[in-house]
Image 1 (cartoon, helix red, strand yellow):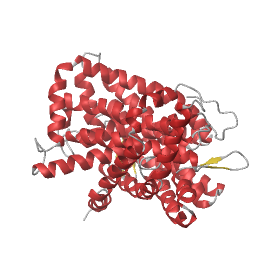
Image 2 (spheres, one colour):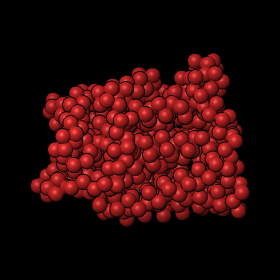
Image 3 (cartoon, rainbow, N blue to C red):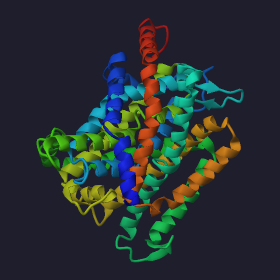
Image 4 (cartoon, rainbow, N blue to C red):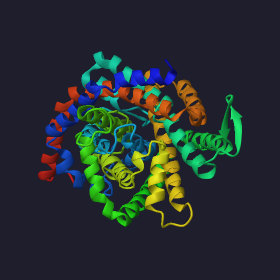
Length: 476
C-alpha cells in the first residue's frame, strides 16, 4: 500500500458520513436556535462591516473589520480556486458538489455566527492587553475546566492544521502550481531538489514566499491584519469582477450549468457508480471542500474574532457570519459556476488549478494573449499568501494555549512554519489536499462538541441582544 493510499484510507474514515452529519446537524441546530439569523439579519451583518462600533472601554486588539479581514485572509485562498475545482472535477464530486457547498455554507453561516459570538464572550485579556480566545477558551471557560483536555486537543489539531494542512502545504502548492503553469508550463528550465527535478520557477517561488511570509509573520496580529485589510478586499473585488465578466459574456450557458449542478447533486446524472453512490460522493466532496474554504465549524475563525475591539459578542458574531457568505456563497459559487459553464470540470487530464485556469482561458478568450490566466494566477497568489499569514496567527494562538504562553515554543513554531512554506511546492497535489482534509476533520470534532454544548448560551444572548436593540438600550 502506497503512502497516498494510506492517506486516503485515513481521510475516508475521518471525513465519513458521521462527521458530515455532525457538521450539518450543528448548522441546522444553531440555525433553529438563533432564529435563522443568517436569513433574518444578514443585511444588518453586512452593514456592521462598514459601521464602526463605539469601542471606548472595550477589550481587543484590532477593529471588527480587521478581525474579519484576518479571518477572510485565512479562508479566501486556494479553497476558493483550487478546492472548488477539485470538488467539482470528474474524478471527485462533479458539478453536484457545488450544491452541497451551498447547503453546507447556508447552515454554516449560523455556525460561524455562533463561533464568533462565543469567541468574544469567553475570551481572556491579560494585564498587557493581549487577547486570547477561540474554541480552547470557550471550551474551558464555557463548558468548564473539566473539559480542558478537549480544549488542548483542539489546540493541538489547530497547530497541526496550520503547519501541515491549510496554512502551508496546500496554499504554497497552489501558488507554485499556478506560477509555474504560467511562466514555465513545459518545465523547460529545471533544477534538482530533494533528488527530483523541479522547474526553476517553482524553486524561486518557494524561496520568495518563505522570505515574504517570514517578514510579515514576525510582526504578529497587527501586521497580519494591516496587510490583510489591504490585500483581501482588493483581490476579492478583482476576482469577482473577472468571474462576473466571464459569466456575463457566456450567459447563455447558465441554464445548462445550473441543470448540471442539480442533476449531479441528486444523482439524476450519476458521475460514477449508481445514483446513490454519486450523491454520496458529491455530498462528501462538496461539504469537505466547503468546510475547507469557509471553515465554518472548524473553529479557526473565532481565534481571529476574539481579537476584535467590541463590547457586544453578538455584533462580532454577525460580522464573523459574513465571512462564510463572502467566501462560499459569493466567491466559491462564481468559481464553480464558471468551471461548469465552460465544461472544464469534465476533462480528466486537468488537475487542481489547471481546471480553473482552463475555464478562465475559455471564458475570457477575448482578452489579449494570456491575460485571463495571468489574472487568475495573480488572484490565487495573493489569496493563498494571505491565507498563509492568517493560519500562522491561528497556529501560534493554539500553541500559546498548549504551551502556557511559552514564547520559545511560539518562535520555534514560526521557524517550522516558514520551513513548511518553503517545502510546500514539493508535495504532490493529491497528498497535500488529503493531509489538509484529515487535519480539518480532526480539528472540527472538539469544536463541534462545544457548539452543541453551548448552543443554549448563544440562543439566550442572541435573543437578549435584539431585544435591547428594539428597546434602543444599545445602538445598532
